[in-house]
Each structure stands twice: as C-alpha cells, then as structure tokens.
Length: 392
Ligand code: FEO
Image (tube, rainbow, N blue to C red; front, side):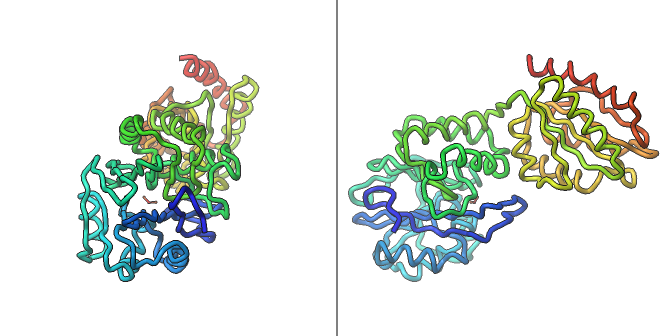
C-alpha cells in the first residue's frame, strides 16, 4: 500500500515496458498515477491506461471496497488517465464521474457512454466529508478540458499532466532518486508535451499561486512531497513556460557524405574554443525527443542538412515537423549545409524554423559539395554574432 498522506493512497499503474509515447522516447518507462481518498464519500482521482486496469484495481481494493466509491474524478480525458473509468464504474454503482464541462463532452466522444456525470465549474468546491476538493480549470495543460483537483485540508494538488515525468519506478516520491534527476525528467516531459502551452501554463501558475501546496501529485511519475521540492518544480515551470533559455548553443545536423558533418564539427570546435557552451546532436543517433529537450534550454540553435533530391534529409524534416508542433519560440537560429546543384531545400529549412517560432540570426551558410578550409572558416564569423546574442 502506498500512502501519500492520511487517508490518501496511490493506486496507479507502473508501465515498465513503455518505450515510446506517441513519438516521445521513454527509456525509463512511465507511471499512470491514480489516487484514492478515503473519506465519507470515497473518491478516486484519475485512472490509468486500459492495460493497467487489473493492477490498479488490486491497489484500489487494498484500500477500499470499490463499491463504496462515490466520485471518480477525471481531471483529463486523454486515455492514459481515463482508459479504465468504464471498467471501474461497473464496480462502483454509486459513483459519479466528476469532470469539467468540456471533460463531459470529450468523455462522451471517446467512450460513447452516458455515464453518471457530475460537471464542476472552475473554482467549484465539492465536499466529500472531512475534505473539500476545489477544481481549477487548466485549459490546454494538457487539453482544453484539463483541470486540477486541490484537496484543501491535505494541501495536495492533483494537477494531472502538469509537473509529471515519464518514469517507471518502485519509488513514488521525487526526492527518492534525487530531486535533480526528477527535475531532469520533468524537463524532458515539459519539452515534449507542454512546451507549446507556455501562456496557459503561466495562467495556471498564477491561478494556483495563492494556494498553500505541500504536495503535488502529478498523473505521471513521481510525487513532489516536500514543500521545498514543490517550490522547485513550480519555479522550473515558471522558467520553462516563459521560454527562458541558457547561453548555450545546440548544433543539430544530419549528413550524407560527411560534408555537413565537417561543417557541424568545425563549428562545434570553434565555439568550444571560444568558451561558448555548445552541444552536438546528430539526428541519425539522437532521438528527436532528446533534441527538443536540449532546444528548450538553448538560446541559439544551428541547424545543418545536406540536400537529397533538392530537399532536406527526411530525418531533418521529421525534426522540423516535431519542432513546428512544439513551438520552441524565441530562440535564434543559424542554418548550414552542403548541396550538389540546388539550394532550394534550404529555404524550406529556414521557413520551417521560422514557423516553429525561432528567429533567424543571420544568412545561412551553404557550400557546394565538399567544404574546403575557407568554407569552414566562414562559420567562424558566427562566433561574434552568437556572443552578441548572449550579451543582449
Ligand atoms: Fe498523460 Fe495528456 O495525458
């Protein structure tokens, strides 16, 4: 039994096998968190992915007879959290499904069932006995219907996807592997899931700023149980949602016959010698979900590709499409690469980066066939430009 606070229990499912979450590489697996609150009107907050039902149910039964459950709170419709509501409801004849107005609409569209819904408004309070639960709408964190549940007496926030991480573990708390480790995974989660929603996240942070929060129980990964750790992850979210970056450069590239790679490595060595923090990401070997995490922290992105059939390489196109969805806006970019007879595809690269919200910092450097020393040295001209960006 995993006790979180007095009469509050974790009843989720650990997904040890998960390695890909719709395009996001999850080498550490994931966890879908559900929580039972034992009170006069026993309540479960969120459920788990469909294949975790038996394991979740076993944990629920360790705490309470499911037939006693009065409320199943659905903070978010996405199926990793709503996937077992229907099965659970069959064992809970007295239960109502508590959700936002859009949540009811979405759940009906997803599951084609007319469950006993209890729609709650933003800021509404639901008394379940010794506790008051307050609902805070969190539109677009992660979906339009998303909301958080706040237990007033426990001072616990259940914010669903927000503040989560894709970690499978026997541990339940963020401080157990070390808060730095958990924050690193929370950053990857933010970069791959939450990054496009900076303004909605800022609004949520403002909305919950007045709440005394001792514990944050996200719907994925580990729980932030110490007030200092709660403040740390809130502060990180403030920085990430504000698109605050570090003075560092990320060079992203792929290559056919090593010409673009020569340019990437020359640029890397030049920046490194100049004392500029710089990292190389070869798209052949680096997963896009790791690249986007590095982009989140980098003030400058240098993007290189050769031309294949007058177009960028497919790996590069995939990365740019991912970026266009996640919109890491405000970063500056330079482009480079090698071509044979047409530079047409470089325009598409520049346009895609602009569409993703980045700002072009200077003209691209494109070299016909194999770069010679003079071609490579032209990349050195970017050093003062980058230093200028950092000081500005
Ligand atoms: Fe973890 Fe948006 O679902």
